[in-house]
Length: 354
Image (cartoon, rainbow, N blue to C red; front, top):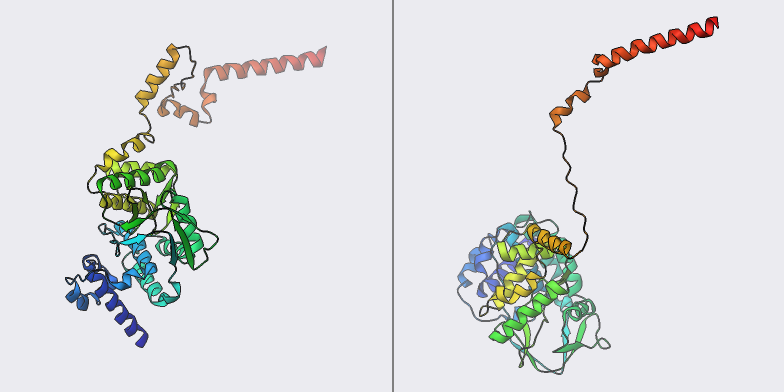
């Protein structure tokens, strides 16, 4: 009883903090917070700026992003975490893991409760969070993800000084972590993301602010996780951008979430025009275009084999094959059987009397 009461108190405090950040609307629709939302609603309109809790609790933010990036599968709208603190980075910077101060018992129980009550239709959500927290709690793995997507224009990772709990980064030039980008920076972000997605086949699942230099160069720093993409993932992304089809799996949902987040960060540019050159590289030509290409090759002496056309008979014309005694009804069969009898009789007489 006491344990459940403490869990409820912690949940109420958490909902109140989230409400101050403008997240009361999505929380109010969740069964997990149906009781905690009532005391929290009094704080929903009191936006007091970024809470220090969010500035220093990256693991909680990662857990929240894991839920937000999967929520559209259950009919929830897209919600994006803001960049809680505009930071300036230069020279040497150390990023530490706050795993020791993280209330694992409370948040794991909370995540499991959300999975069972609100996201029960999403298979593998808790397993996805376990993979993410494994990356987030080991700065060496987290740094390896950053290095895989980093364009090295702004920073490089100092692997000699990096440990499990601390990531050392050397900045080549001053950069700001922000979610308010100029128009040139937005174009660079769109190209940067598209190059990672369509060329290198890497998905950056979510991010809270991007690094931007004075030259509008872009790089990622606080990210949720990365995933390798297959051809079917690229095809889904193209259909999502062009036809707005609904995602059916967690991976597809994370892809759609990332593109919606990209739109959120690039409100002043035409994202479709910016991505157009990448999309054309992956759209297959129609059959008519292929036939035209083959005809052109044939005119210039190129030999190609066309697929043979098979004229299959109708099924009803073959039903007679199902009759195992059909040969006995054949006149030719009756004639041939009589001939065999005469031949056998003649052979018997020849052997008997000659």
